[in-house]
Amino acid sequence: MDKETVRDIQTKDKRVLVRVDFNIPLDKSTGEITDDSRIRATLPTIEHLVNQGARTILASHLGRPEGRVTEELRLGPVGERLSQLLGRPVRRTRDCVGNEAEKAVKEMEEGDVLLLENLRFYPEEEENDPQFSKSLAQLADVYVDDAFGAAHRAHASTVGVTQHLPAVAGMLMEKELGFLGKALANPERPFAMVVGGAKVSDKIVLLENIMKEVDFLIIGGGMANTFLKAQGYNTGSSKVELDHLGSARVILDKASKNGVQLLLPTDAVVAKEFTRESEHKTVPITDVPDDWMILDIGPETAARFNEELNKCKTVVWNGTMGVFEFPTFAEGTKSLASSIAKLDAMTIIGGGDTAEAIVELGLTDHISHISTGGGASLRFLEGKTLPGVEVLLDK
Ligand code: AMP
View: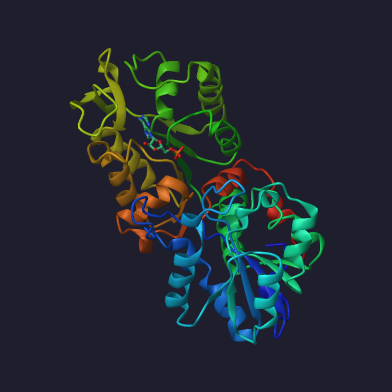
């Protein structure tokens, strides 16, 4: 990586503001943390700073409080979990700037860890407000960005603050950029990108960019419907983006010109309704009945995808193969996840729903890298510069 990292700088006795991404999933009814991967992923940076004798000041957002103090989105439970994982106290403030935060920082000693309150309780955070950026920066001597998941956003805590403090990458940021960067710039071949999820429109730029890099492009999930329709198949009552049929045709055409093997489903699990309990059956892709919708890839498709993936040395996967939230339509995603987990290859999961599926299936340890940033990894794979990375000091 061409950016300075937390390991390149002296942090002993310094006040170090670390932007982390503790935007973790919480159970809607109990408020309990359902997946703490994002907290665990920041431990190397925090432990490094603690061992160096820094005063570590952590800042994060959680959820979408839309600029207002929202009790359910306070970082209390996150602080408790972090404290358990670190095996040391984590002090918390009920504000992220101003008198209370400043007083708490003043009271810190070498090796202490402090967690500021949810940044997005202030609208100024997402507005990248200069005064708010300054108030955050005033708390520290150095800035470390370890929030890969927020690096595609130009906010006060990811961009504004770097106007006032020397800014370097944390170890998670370094790891994320290392894996994704290697996949794009120097992949071991054959290289396959597996794309799924709801819509083509979300991933069209990704498909266009990745086309130049990959040997295999494997498309499943709801987005495959638009490609199938573009090829003239009957897709019944499936969700199809009619205004993207043209883009799908361009991608299909480019794949054949560039020698990219593009794979689409050859069978599907179809349902009468978009519900958990809907009547359903598996059919060849040539026989999707009118009034039925495709909600998952079928077993023949999963086996074919698996067969091609077995040839690959680099695999990047973003987007579920079906409606994973409904157990009946989760088999395609499960099957693909276990295939990818068995590969002798560098395997990268691009965050979001796909990462949650891997965690739920207990396959985390069998994947080379699970990104903590769905949106950020998409932007990166689209070939875009991430604003939160651009502002860090060059090596
Ligand atoms: P994404 O956030 O783009 O990765 O999309 C994930 C979402 O795509 C999940 O909520 C899935 O339920 C949805 N999805 C996957 N396959 C289908 C499908 N065949 N029809 C409708 N939605 C789907």
